[in-house]
Length: 124
Image 1 (tube, rainbow, N blue to C red):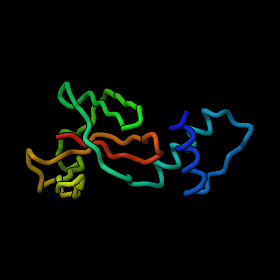
Image 2 (cartoon, rainbow, N blue to C red):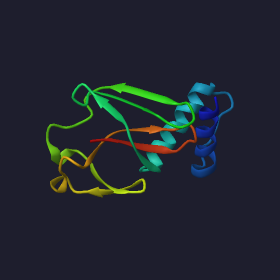
Image 3 (cartoon, one colour):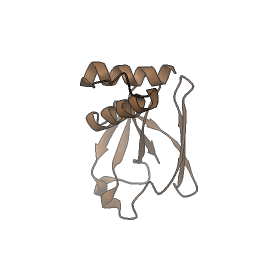
């Protein structure tokens, strides 16, 4: 519940999302998530676990929220993927597709954590 209310609170306070009190909590939560996804590129980058040729990912924040998803997260054409180079101390730098090598990270998905922050999930 903490995650739900943090996401709703952020959408209202930072992006002036209107809430219709006659809507269900699920509808308000969905609207808040969409508001954050639409208005934030990402708040931070975090490495996720990937398996099965990058078709399954898993991630968890430090507050008990876990995320798992299956799908085709990468394009077969490197030009259509987004790459990051790890610079140390939790910092990543976005790089052009033609600059990447086997030590660089690729964007897999986005998720909103317990604090309502949009996380770019990356994997080697």
